[in-house]
Amino acid sequence: MRKRKIPCSRRFTPPRRSGFTLLELLLVLAILVVIGGIALPNFVGAGQEAKVNATKVQLDALKQSINLYQVRMNKLPETLEALRDGPSDAAGKSKWVAPIITEIPTDAWENTLQYSVNGNTYEIRSAGMDGQVNTDDDITLEGV
Image (cartoon, rainbow, N blue to C red; front, side):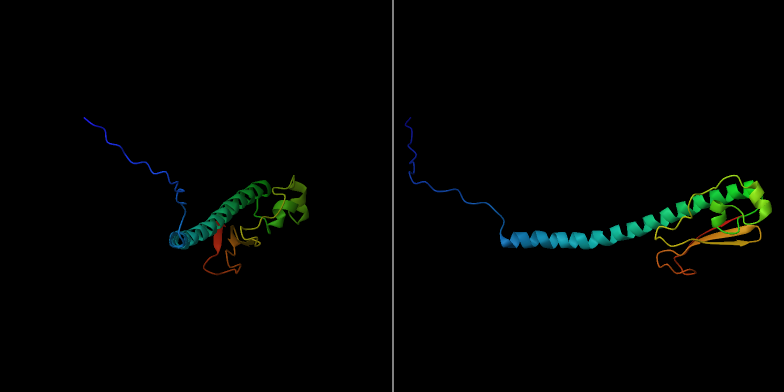
């Protein structure tokens, strides 16, 4: 059996440069834009939902503070400031021991919270994302 000789080329050919063509780069860019267009609205919606949930947690914590005030003073506070400063009447001041909260909280959008008392019930209201009270996006909590 005879071996065959394989001709060997003596010419040196440099290796081809590997890289991306302009068409490939544009295709990848188009795919990224489509994915970003789908994902971005979902992330924005998640941010607003997180703010709503944070405001609900804030209102629940404030409800606990109001309940503590009611146990201490045997009445509801007239304002949210009463949780920090104590009651405004002299009889209530004599029972006042210490502040329940150190500062008046705001909602997740940095709006002040609305507090109203109606007899033995109260309502705490956040204006929500638009900052306008008595609109569809308001977040309310009622207590007894």
